[in-house]
Length: 293
Length: 347
Figure 1 (cartoon, one colour):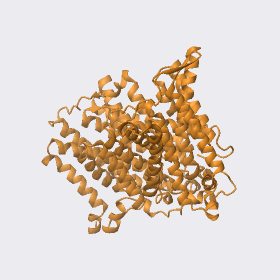
Figure 2 (cartoon, rainbow over the protein chains, first blue to last red; figure 1 turned 135 degrees about the horizontal axis):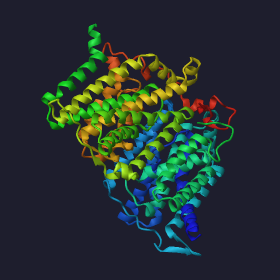
Figure 3 (cartoon, rainbow over the protein chains, first blue to last red; figure 1 turned 60 degrees about the horizontal axis):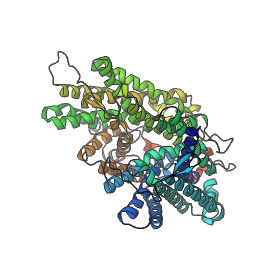
């Protein structure tokens, strides 16, 4: 029972983190129908920027977080302007190839600036590294920070989409780009900001998770697959779905690692993607009645 | 045979393969290795182009299938003591069988979803290669004995080179012929408009399975040759970056062009070798090549060849099809009553 509650607690905290990665993917997919394969690398860039500010330049944590998120936002804008905008008109498959090109350019830049293969940058924990005790469950305090920050980001996004004009523009473009254009929205620009917001969310996730994962240039893709699994499980277009998918994936990973074998943990995400796409194409909370694949 | 045919794409292929045939006479050990690598990548690019460029299935599993071919061949030699000549075809067929099984999700999935499912498959394959240690020897890889040439008096690396050359020639001619046959035309019809293809009596399951089978047989064969060329197999050679290299080859050469695959593969092997020491630069260059070609010339170098060289024909090349105008915008126009923008992505 102790093991079970421990696994549940870890599952929920890692799940919250996967949900955060999935959120960025869902935001971009929802409004552009593009899965940004460079999402993981944006995550890596966010983490690396925070490392540069916080560890190397000695800037306090909160400003470093803001700088890193702003940096990721800028990278998002740049990639959209340079790589995606003119490719979008050639069709989705071409954009997909362009995003994977971007992902490797970013990974190469990351490797070039922040170290070679096998170098792990250790990001010091922001608060005390002591684990916290709840009843008889131990939780790393950093995991709790991730959980709380994840909830904050999700709340902020919900407010952004419901209450702000920019959020409503994005939703309008997502549900019907032609009509949005006819209403006078500049959908080019909205796509650009969508990619940028997605990148900023990835960057934020990167900063928050850095103390737990350590940073290396290849970290992005591993987490992209997990975020992707969470997003697909949740239905790819649904923000609550991404959160639910993330939590389920986190729990599934922890439980399979605890009760089956620890190496199974890494393969759960792939299995989830394959099976969700084939047997549950609209995901758990995606739109019903439409087969989208 | 007119003079035009000599400078056209046939002339180019003959020249390149002729040059590769006489290369060993002038080459040192390293040049021979690079030439051999070029042959392996020509096979890989041909296979991937059949699947992506002709049949229009955006799959990301080719590197994994390549790995399965290499591991299959090498493991049969190491564990069961088979000779290379028996193990290579079996490895390639094994890759083909596994690759063809991917066609079944492909019938239900299209576009992005197929890409994601195959990406997940590729990563799962990596995971198996890493963790099934009793069979695959894990992350460190293992050595493969050089092929035995029996009574033929030839050094193993030269032998592997000429074997690769012969296989490449065979597979190249096969791809050339089959892409101009009924099968190739069916692939192109499927790529350009699935519904119309079905209306013309093309059975999508059969032809998608065939595209996956052909492409994974090519990848498996390339893997078998690669294991003999390097004499060493490890999971790292078959990761996502390998996929990007192959993707860049067909995009740079030209999607939906047999000669384009050869052109892209031979150029990019050279780029890869120049940058061998610099992993980060390699990643940046191949990523940037993909972006540049996607932005400026999504149909690849064969467009220029077709424009400048008389007699260079590309009957089934992507450039000839009428591009649908701004599909992203049209997606919702086709289905304005629906709330879901992706509704038009239905298969």
